[in-house]
Amino acid sequence: MEAKGRLCFLRRRMSIRYPVGESGQFLTLEQDVLDHLAKWRQLDPKMPEAGGQLFGAVEGQCIQVKLATGPRRSDRRGRFFFIADRFAERREISTLHKSGLHYFGDWHTHPQPIPTPSETDISSMADLFARSKHELNAFAMVIVGTAGPPKGLHVSLHSVSAWSRLEADTGV
Image (cartoon, rainbow, N blue to C red; front, side, top):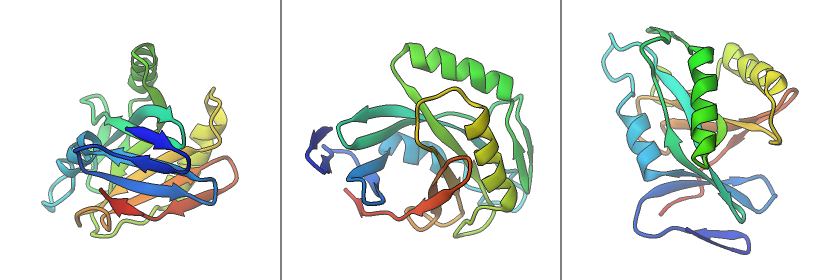
């Protein structure tokens, strides 16, 4: 990926790009991430929610989400809830940081075609942002619905006191 001014140019692989307000930055979900999220969609009524973490790198104006992890065996999962093993997640953040990937946020599924965040989702992200040691302006949250991307993905940025939804720009 090359960053030139305000644009992100992707080579060969599909991705979904989300402009970040008027900042000139883009959050990009890369193909490997989209593939991982797609395999956990709750297409069967008996499937429990799944979730994990989002990792990547910043190159110029591009915030590249390159890896989605989870779910883990130690997570608690049900049809309408997902509770991550936070101890395992902290280990994962440390391990992946050593390999050059930075934690950007969390993802989880909802059993609806076009997902929307619950009050619990919003307050959990604000709490996580407040309790974490980081230098980010916000954490990303991706909710994976049963519809295909980009409509079946809710992508938002969260800080302690505010959040904003990002709308897909292009699938390249």
